[in-house]
Image (tube, rainbow, N blue to C red):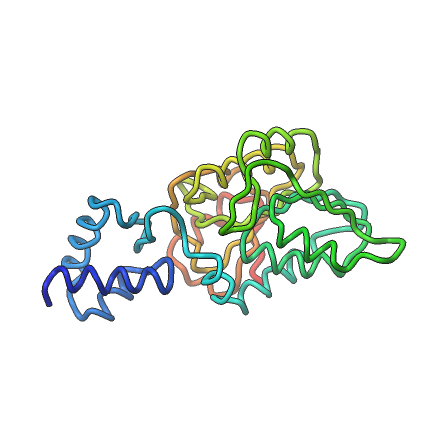
Length: 255
């Protein structure tokens, strides 16, 4: 197989799945790990991809939100349900944007007496849509520049607005979690929002399914020592690096 044909097939896998492991690429293409390693180095040099721990993502961001919303849904729902059990009526909660946070919002919408502060239009809509009783939740959608693909706000105005609040919990969903970078995301603006939410909350809860464990994305925003609770799924127990992570974070819950 010529190298350009391999490049095309690697691009196709990344467009479909957003993030692909080296093992998946070598299996699909039927070539050696060393060949794929060289191909990924070349594609990264061209600016088309970004290599991450164990694989690669497309340059410019993680998987499209439409792809993320339909992957590992079972694991994400289990994580969301578990997070719901950590939340108490009367609390103020930060939620950032992403497919996992949308499922967390569905769970929190069934609770009452919460103040939810978010930069995600979808999260705000899912929670506010259930209002109509005396114990309804209050939703505050943060202002700032609007990012259409993710349906969220970001930038200096968003970060400044976050600093006005003191929340009980910051519930955040990163691109990856590893021992060196902690919780990290691909886009700087998303990371700055998550960093501000964590800094202005008494407790930081990280929601990350097994595919994010051991993954290091481009911008770290919360060191492992500052993560109070990591909620992941049971498959994460078999992921390389999970034991090292568990030794540092405050608490790990396998949903």
